[in-house]
Image (cartoon, rainbow, N blue to C red; front, side):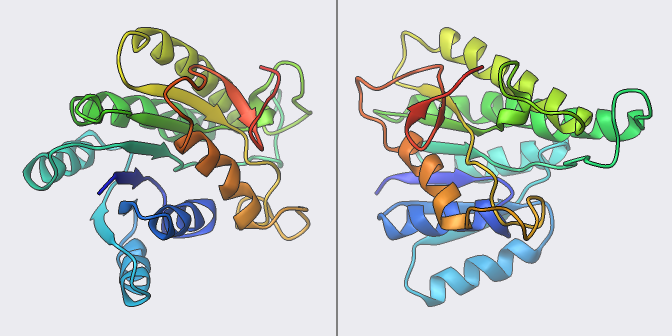
Length: 230
């Protein structure tokens, strides 16, 4: 059975991505910073889905180490890592009035978190015949398509896009592919009720990147399966 780990999967896009992966036959390791994710995993298991749970704070090195040890003890490989956990869509500030505490936290979670988790889990991903890393990014981090405001979130996602390019290049000669995905503006706690997309539509972009074939793209930025501007 193929295995997939999703970060920040206790609600919103992460939860729906975990659901869709499990429905496609993956054994999903659902992770979340809070213990709320445990109840979500139990909910999915009650629906007949193959879901495991482990706590993970992507900004905490000890938490990442504990997850890595658990996976090494219980799984012989990992096929998919979805770096979904994210924080601080800071519409209330701009570059000249910003709270740098918020900026630093956004970078720790949205950029360094995926970097640290990917690095820690790479030995297991390399044991997969077709490892996939999907970095859940945003057009707010695009030089071509970004918009005013949200400086902490936008800077962190822009850096995540560069991480995607760098890591994809470093993995070019392996079975692991890395891509970034913008799920669009989705109705979640972060996206708000005015967003035009529901979580199933947003998660579909992520699932597309999970399922790309051996000859599929590496080091790209996509929405709905189509390349978008960096």
